[in-house]
Image (cartoon, rainbow, N blue to C red; front, side, top):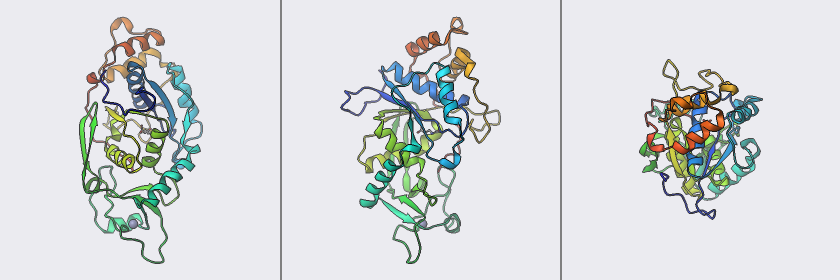
Length: 312
Ligand code: GLU
Ligand code: ZN
């Protein structure tokens, strides 16, 4: 088995992976590739595969998109374990995690507007924003109300062993600075929700797109400070469109037709370094899955990644 050592959970070390789409648009070919990679890795390791709808960012959530994603996954023959988890129903858990970090002094309130941060001429951050220069670290000026809550980060290199990309190293203070866990509008940040939920769902193997590689050291740091176990990570290559941008809702990537069958699944497997033998082309979907699960090997996934505009 190619899996990095799993945390010794009470579940006896059963692999537990997940797919966590954001319902900001339909499932496109890039998200299908991620779904296929995470599913094959879980099933090839006799593991479980859970689903989570990442609708924590309410303003970006598109009504009906979650349903459409679930129906499309079903049509492609994905079988998930247990109930689908919706982030929009878990705000209490995110609050509880933030409270713990407030209690231990790991987070602090920040009053800065984007403009005030920009006026300090901070360096560009690894996710396309600005490195937060720690303006509010020393405490709020009197009379100013908190807008957001930021996580303190160390001036230290965090190293993460990735099963596809190799070792990833990042100095959080230089690459991102103290990052936001709750935004000024009261929304919880993806970075907080994702670690709280991965821990709650007992996820010990994360397989997702390489556009999230730069977020991983932040998540590892958060997990450590919350006293939660660190999962194994594998970041898959990301599908770009003809102009070299990552397929996404922002670049208006087309929805995959739910009737795409083994032809589209084979294209996804091919993209992940697993070309499907010609006699399998056009096979019924269950036959494709049998072949793909039996032949999956994460060593064959090409690490190649472009430059991605990340997320805040
Ligand atoms: N919800 C994120 C996305 O759709 C994925 C988060 C993750 O896999 O950690 O890009
Ligand atoms: Zn501030």
